[in-house]
Image: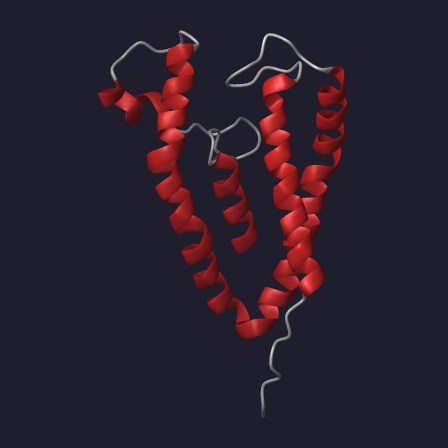
Length: 155
């Protein structure tokens, strides 16, 4: 039996691009809205707050819709075993690298600048060790969302 060649779904690629742009603009604008963030501008702008409320309502549903469509097409390529191997290599390895490098340093600097931590940077691992969020099973921290998403996509 011949396997049919997989065709690229271009609208899904463009939705991914749109989703990442929304995430980028959303997180970049957090500097100017009312809610607490790692770094804040003393002046906030009402239109940024409107944008953030809109993006908060639509950003994650858009990402889950894209993820679901991608999952549908990915499972059709080579079965469950290949899918799990692909997800571990493409998601879990980068998330672990991110958590050990970028996220740890970011959390250390955030806690240091907010007066929550005063130890030297050599104690970074103990200071930024991720914690499980109560009732969710998800890990807190910068890359915790990605790690949680990776585990959801494998289940």
